[in-house]
Image (cartoon, rainbow, N blue to C red; front, side):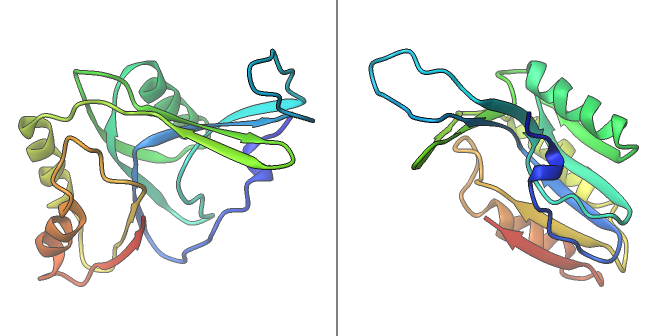
Length: 166
């Protein structure tokens, strides 16, 4: 069985604030035959994003059972989180099927309201000089495609390093 250790993390060396928006399900199969029932060799759910050895504070939106999975996974790793719980939908699941070729199927994700986005901006306002903010993943389709730009503008007057991995 695969584990999160099978996924090679990138390490960043300071306080990290990470925007998490998805849970991944990695599936390995010997062969995939479309229109047939295929057996898997191994599977492993894991939260997406960076997994540094340093202090991590995970930020973002979660919803439904997949959101609970992300929160519980971070708690098991003794990592701090400050998520906005979205009322409609559930945290998206990306399915990655690995065989001779790799296929990815990305979930839709929750519907984030204006009120929930404003709650998230209040969390961003708590960041302090010296923090590193990693904006990772696709911007949900229900939000403005310039969301990362908007977040970067909110922190530009502080000494916060921003890394975009999208």
